[in-house]
Amino acid sequence: MITIWLVFALTCFAAWGIADVFYKRGSAENEKYSHLKTSIMVGLVMGVTAIVTLLVKNISYDPRNLLIYFPVSACYILSMTVGYFGLRYLEVSVSSPIQNASGAVSAILLMIVLRELPDVWTLVAIFVISAGVVLLGVFERQKEVKYLKENERKYKIGFIAFMMPIFYCIIDSLGTFFDGLYLDNFETTPLVGVTEENIEDVANISYELTFLIVAFVLAIYVFVIKKQKIVTFNKETNRPVFTPVARLLAALFETGGQFAYVYAMSGNGIAAAPVIASYCVMSLLLGAIFLKERLSWKQYLAVALVIAGIVILGVLEGLGEAEA
Image 1 (cartoon, rainbow, N blue to C red):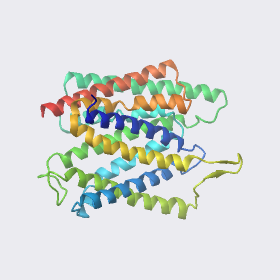
Image 2: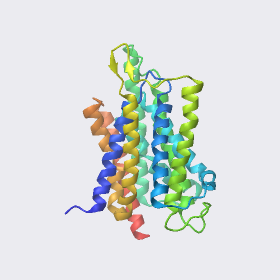
Image 3: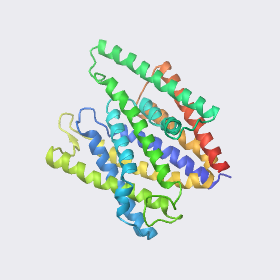
């Protein structure tokens, strides 16, 4: 009989993989502010989720936490936005595994800042992930040069686009690192008015409300200052445009996956962590099926290396939680 934590883990695995595909469908290469429009949509959904959480759970929330938690929120929001930019030009099969390598970067940060040397298996995972990312960069560059020789303009900023998921990985890792400092102990956390029971909710609400504020600021910039419009119909092809709906669906699956993640990790973190950490496999499969993405065998090999490293880190994370 399937256990409830596994249901949540598989739900998160599927939701985040599906979200990646909708993020790609919502990223229009010829739409200059496409990545900002995606951030606006995600911020709105996150904000609604935060408000509903406050009302349903009746949490006593101190608004000062918006400023206190801002460094963490800023890292997460910025990383997601640069990731959306990269998706305008990169296959989700390439970007998703790189973005999911943030666990390796977090481990490196621990070595540098806290001067903690990880165990052998963590070092192996970091090496495998790093090798996979480097190879992906080399193979993506080779493909870019090939397309340029064939006078294809799609990959003219391929290198810049390839750097976006790497920036995502680094910035998201910084957010995770700072998050650990904020949430390690409710007695020493800089957050105010929190208890051991609600500290995670307060942090998550602070992040989601900050994303909502950023969404409003971006909306003013995009739709008022830059006078952009929400494109729902293409006059040239005489067909409706799917990108706004794709952005909404991506935001909904992102938020749903986050909900499932919390319950999966609290139910059985040891087994749930590697399942969730490898959700880029779902992104890869769905990208091949629905987006018709085709990578070379060398790229698939590099992706496999990254995923293997992520799974190793996920297993180690679960074992670490068990020992704690």
